[in-house]
Every structure is written in C-alpha cells, then in structure tokens.
Length: 137
Image (cartoon, rainbow, N blue to C red; front, side, top):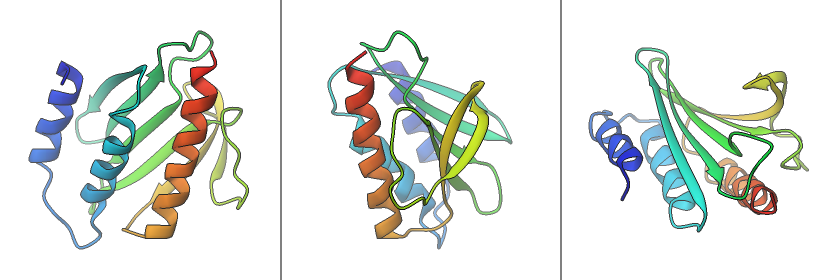
C-alpha cells in the first residue's frame, strides 16, 4: 500500500461511525477503485472543509484525475463524488451538472448523504465508466 492510501486509512480510522453509514460508502468506493491497475491516488485533506481522494489513470494526459471522492465536513459528513462531464454518462440524470466545478472543468457530481444501495451502485457504474475512459488516455 502506498503512502497516499496509508494517509487515507489514518483518516478513516479517526472518522466516527454515524447512522447514515457514510464512512462505509467512502470505504466501499475506495475499495472499488484500489485494485484497478494503473490508478494513481492523491489525497488532499483540507481540515474542517473537505477530505479528497482523487484518482487518475497513468495513461491520462489531458486531465489531472478522473474522479474526486470528497468527504464534506458537516454534521454528519457526506460524500460528493465528481467526474469530468466528458468522462461519463448519466443515463438516469441522477447527478448535478456543475459548470467549471471540477478543477475548472465541467463536472457531474453525485451527492451521497446516506447509505442507499441503488445510488451507490449507480456511482460505482460511473466509476467503472470513468476508469475505462481515462485508461484510454
């Protein structure tokens, strides 16, 4: 495990459980991405605001990431999972289009405020789609 994921594990360890099970969602999405070949992670903690796990494919040259998993510091914490709009589809229109919302690029973001299996599966499908698109360079 690299240093970035060690930092993330330390963050998770200090994250208290909540009835919304948002910690479990974050772990599930991180674990969904972790074994995929070619992924480079970056962890950007902004104490008291957000804790971002960013994933990039080593073949990507035009974008600094393909997904940003943001833990939003609130009571309780919740997740915002953002993708560049041109890396994914959103067939159910479940995401929010955010002009210039991801490091200056147009984004589609999915807010996960509590454990909802269907919503999590939908985001995992978008993760897979973004990963495949990013792997093509």
